[in-house]
Length: 364
Length: 231
Image (cartoon, rainbow over all chains, first blue to last red; front, top):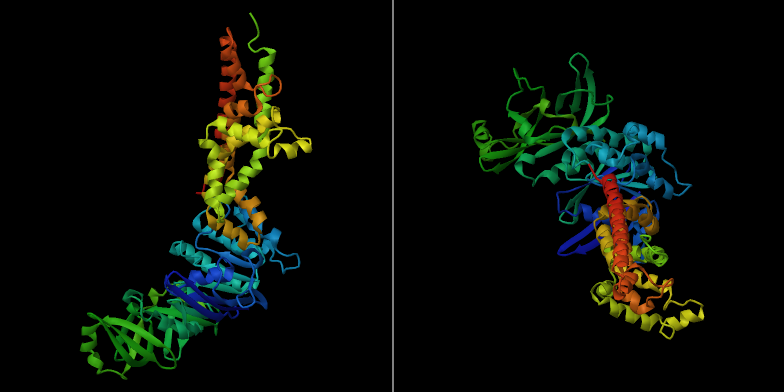
């Protein structure tokens, strides 16, 4: 476990961050300029805090009170950056083995073959980094960090430089790493979809401070609330239900209702976080009929937020969670919900499930 | 009809090559270290150190040679101490090597420094995060990545050593078989009646050696850059 409590002032920016990670993946979530990369630097030993400590599995990495500062090369923290930073003068195999030479002999070694197999990079071993595609390079970089047998893996926006197809290819690999190699991961991202899919715990950073820590479903919606309207989305904790093999659909269950998603979503009963964009939600006063939309969630209108001609309706769902729906103010008025008249009114939220790609659905 | 090069000429050619090689090999580790330090480290007095290293580039070579004579002559500041240890530099070929090394040093450091500065610091950071201490990080990442620049710096220094005249003749004179190099011998011929032809022959040899050195370094450098190119 990593225990971080650090303060650092750089220029006019004040960083004051304290958190501990949980099992699996802990996400550091925040927009650019929130202090994510600065925090990573302090954990990895690329920078010194003005005050505070970082303790990894009981090993003090830095403590300003007792004047301890371990340099980066003695911390045993694997780093994966946005750019792969592979050594251009070494082949893929040598890149992968680089950290091996320096890992303590008695360290719980991560198997070379297991990593190569998990990441699917067996065919690349003889190549030069210059001959790899962006996605391949990033997989090798992840493998290289893993093979140094780190006690913690820090991933700083590892998918940000990749296109959507490559992300979809690498996201499941990161999930497999989490499950197979049991190395705790701190995952830095400003991407709500990646974070909700991967993380079991989220640390929300805002302007150098921790704004919230907790379960993605609890923490992410409020972290999203001041984003630009195109980014407005809600995160719901749901449970995987039955599969419909005929149509290749899977049921996701929430106390407020059920939605059907394309493809396999994991074992029945598994917990999933689903990111639903406010623009993909339609409101109805009556239970839906004769629509192509395959999901309706029941709740009550809790709040209406005006955004020029548009409005965001906050629906308090039956059971738990809040769903955001983007609509025009005129539509709300015609439903008789405008001007706060409809607050508390029962309402059905229809989710366009075809808009949910697999990136938006994550395990916990 | 006589040989293209006489025995004295051959002696001077081999001596020149020996002096240049020794000067290069002796100064190479210091050059690499200085280049890396100037590229990557911050320390008080860095500007002064930089100026000191680059000084021979702008000083008249005769002045450098004279300073060497004062410092490393038999009664010089360091010369005395070295003489007690049995090392004599003044008027010896080893002194010529020292003069050549110092004259070539700024050229060597300049090329290597640029090359170290061009390395993406993130690569060195990655090496650290993988557990490489500063020494291994240098040997396994920085040094190989700077190799093209190191080759260029070494070539420049080598070529400079072959052509070095002013500091050499001031510090170690022009003694046949001991300190008489190609340039000082050419100078000697030009001072003798009828020496023009011999001077011309040596000039041609000098040209060939310099051309071979530059071409070889270009080839090595091009290969290195191709290997390091990122797709």
